[in-house]
Image 1 (tube, rainbow, N blue to C red):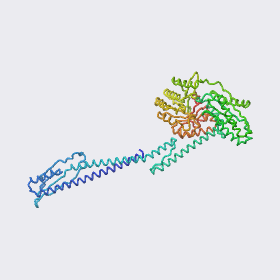
Image 2 (cartoon, rainbow, N blue to C red):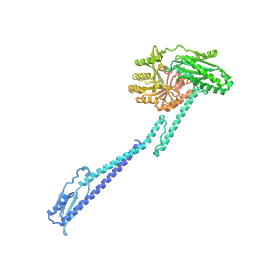
Image 3 (cartoon, rainbow, N blue to C red):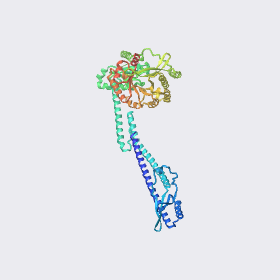
Image 4 (cartoon, rainbow, N blue to C red):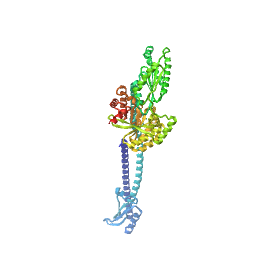
Length: 633
């Protein structure tokens, strides 16, 4: 029982005792008063009757007439006249009835009124004694009516008092509930400030909670800031802020193995020749400043999609990775970048004429990172010898149909109508090789090829993937995770249809997780809150994949009841060799563990990366190594 409830009960019990005591004392007082009145009535009647009998003739008929007159005109139950020897001469008796009074009242509150007695004389001679007993019925009726009135009044007072105490308890409880909600919100990663209550005793508690909320918010912000610093230290070049070579290679490995990005793209490299000569002419400090300006210029001039990666590969060599970009577009991109850097060079020193070497190569998903980088180096050597920009095509293109802009809509509508889509499953295993869940991604077989989600995926296709996932839940006891594009969350009607699909899953929905890519989320995490509301109604879970860019959003994601997150594969690449990435992963795991969020690693390619992630506390792995281990097991 809560403290306030105990206080309310104690107040009500005390109030009941007070009212019951007042009621009892009042009834006893009333009974005493009525007893006195009955005794006085009996005494007055006896004296009056004795006086009348003493003044009249003493024959029995006259005396009986006087007794009958008093008996019929008053409220008496017994009038008796006895001689000096105690013999009854005349006696009138009537039943003492109390109409409308319950039988238990006279038994519970009997009226003990003394009878009235007086002597009857004839001159100086005593001829007898008159005894008069008053009737108790009308007194009990009066006592009963008074009890009812008093009880009603006491009940009204008690109810009014109870309501008043309840309102007072509610007034006191409201700030307590708000403080409890604030404490729960702090645990949920929401750091709101509580208005101080008017109750003086609770103001200090509210101030303490507000200070704690601010300290925890500051602590989370500091942790997120440290994690971002670790990410920048391990993944970014200190001089330019661009990705370093290891991080750039990790991004390349990710796009070559991630089935949900376009199956082809372009890698371009721009090199500023004779960096040593620049150092001699400008000095090391000014050269570093100028390279930082070059990096800013490249970032402004290279307008590509959100998956574009720009890095400093070493010295004055910059790399650009753009999934889904054709070779011709890559050449145009390099030409624009070279023009921007050349214009910047003219502003630095008119006497300097820098030579820029640039090369672009196309890649396809079947390529390995080593092969792609080797072809880039070869093309860059050709550019250095021949001058200009070298664009080298990749291997044979993937068998991907190109229906055209209008044809895509018809293709997808027809596939949705015929339910031609299928799911491709990828295991997520814990450190011991046990299945955590199976992640499913949507595929579309077309003309002998299988299109991945990176090549289509409107909101309707996400719903089709969830429908197939619900079917998979019914067919297998394994937990299922389905990828959903962030842009689908803001599509009109998507969440309503998702709600209906999850309703068809019934209790199986508790084994379903919906994964949203961090890359498509904006800073406000638009759409996630509404998605979580739908998922929570059915017991489903929320996961974030490709996590690593919006590290400061981790506490806010936890406030949305995040179940797990999957570290982006670029942070897992060569994790056993990259000390900076190990510190970053460890920091993310520690913060996530404090928030009760599980961390998984994406794109684990080898046993060394698997072991390194397990040692850092990562709860599960997915990627080629997970698939190999499941097949081997």
